[in-house]
Length: 498
Image 1 (spheres, rainbow, N blue to C red):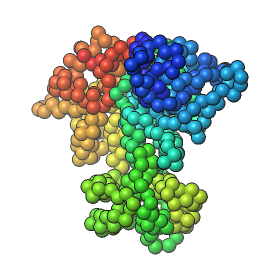
Image 2 (image 1 turned 90 degrees about the vertical axis):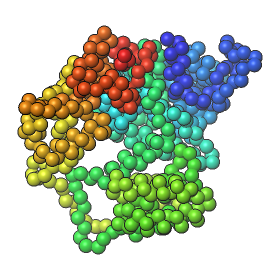
Image 3 (image 1 turned 180 degrees about the vertical axis):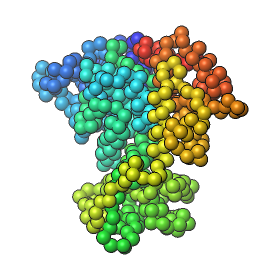
């Protein structure tokens, strides 16, 4: 187990600490370089001592491993330094946001134990389309670790904006998970003290699902854009008929003329600004050609312009139809970063007067939205699936009657969900023809929880039901980030698929 814990600590800590102790190292040889940064983390032997700030400072991975059986809590994100505040070296200080050296992971606290860890893995995929790297079981619930592929460094050059961006990402992760998982703590410290992973409390560990900080930024931007556009239950009706365009708002001109905006890792900068401006052009019904022409001029005037190919890629993304317009949250963030920290919404946006018109309930409408039909179908599959048979056989006519869905809509929906790897489908033609349908989520639940000796027969049944080979099944599971590694998870989560 010790080497397995070493792997866990390596994935979390990255290069934030030195590899070996500076003094009294038991494993460092004379000719071995002590790789890693001069960072520090804090460890505590119990929750009571943690509440009293009585702990100790760790500056090497060797020290972490030496103390792994004595720790109950730690700080998985690294700090520039740590210090003791008393002569007896019992009380520690320095674990505050303004002393962060690098962000290694996002940690989500779940104050509820009604779901088991396997359900949390699946709920995480449903909510944010990725799995946690690590799940720790606590006395009252769980802690979910989402580790980065590379750390996000907090530097003076970036004016320490990395922490602000990371907090925004962390909050979006929590809010998205809260829709699927009860007991998510939305208000706790984003980069504070967490449970320490040990051989007793690790309920799930998979080293594969790690994402870059940049991809988390893009995901978070999409979340904020969705918040802005998906005011599903209401819309504003204006008193006047004047058309308000984003390109006419004050913020647009402020960002358009700022040549000092640069691109830096882990900071909302040049790329995000150009993307936001492109979204404003798109929402204002400007043509792609007009947007490209104008942003080429903007890009050329920047102190550090983008390559033409990168600029075109950004504009194509903005015009892809996935977005309705630039998110106010990101506009505000960009302007407070590059224009003025004290800039207000009144200085950025056009004030509009109106009243809220609430959208009709589905029962009062003649037509349903596509996402509502999707929810109906996936819920139906969920309700009619169980552990050892996570699929059903049904005729298309019966499915239409069950869901009360138009045939053409059902055909489009089945095609879309199949392409997105959210369902498996096989069509059996003929007089007694029917559909074989399975929710990929239900399949994943079975793969995670089925006993090892029953797994072979389960996969064989899947092959027979859906008429495709083992490699296809394993390929789809791999694309969904289900790990095929063994030996680092508790018995419940031996997810090897053979």
